[in-house]
Image (tube, rainbow, N blue to C red; front, top):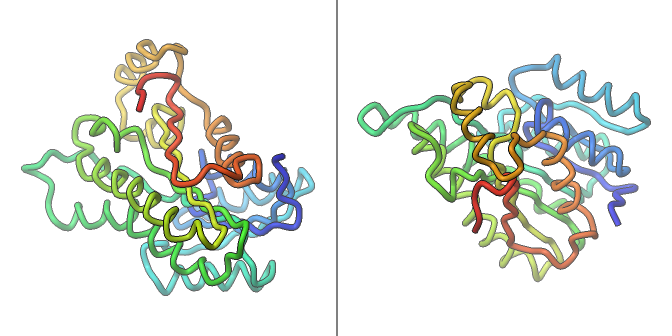
Length: 251
């Protein structure tokens, strides 16, 4: 049953695209949602307003989830608003940041991509854990790129998302005995700002044409999957990575 009544959730990168849909879906199921954002406050406020307009409860919190001090601020903001227990954490924050092949892939760029995609997950999980009790759920976001190496120039991003897959499995083993489930979502081509920014239109057209369902995915479809993994509907799923790509890649 997809019921999160009286539950508290944090969604990192929760203001737009997939993160927005995750925030909206969790709130619609009854969760009080802390919508984390960094760059665009307007989008975060809009997401909160959408949730409230539909009878939900949400707040927005600006925090750079690659910075331990700001992660601590995120957790404090959430617990001050909704109580000391955090039942659901969804780590959506991440990004490609740019396409660079190995000769141009400097250490600064490599570290930045690792920080936003992998270190952020570690930091937020670590900070959330003291507030998460039995029955809690963590949902991380990897990518199809972790499985197939990603598109041209996505080496650092693919490696970071591969790290998220492995981190998810390690956390599932460590936290499972505490009654906390940890799972992962690995999207393929989803119609989002990510691909508007970093993927050429002709590449998107070709990928969609080669997908058995003959289209890109929608952010709300990914949001529904995150909701499933956050609730007791998935109570015996732990340490799993669920691919959502329309059939372009099979594990």
